[in-house]
Image: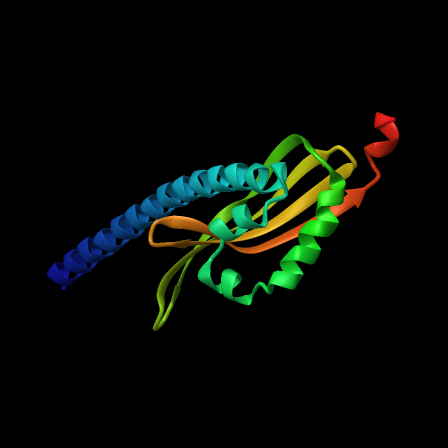
Length: 156
């Protein structure tokens, strides 16, 4: 009985240490993914909005976004948001990455961010959903919520 209890205790200790190590690795990896994904957003939003470039968005888009984004929808979006004018200040992004696992398709790494920027004729909030594929972050969803006119009265 004593040998059984010692073996059970040793096994329990191994499981606890293994679980703690796994949590540590996930926390470290999650922190690295957060930093990577934030850097991606902080580079992508200014690149897209400096000249309101559809191509800059498409160059960073997932294959699904490129496939589903109709040219007329993109043209309408960029025509509308380009009325905000020139980028004055990119205020940065907030958000985080997520790791998951789907049976059949394997591991999934994604991120959700909000970014804010000030433009000549207003402010905008950007909502981005990212996916990490083959080691690269890509934009899976890109939404712009403009607040036109907020800055234009102050610039007159």
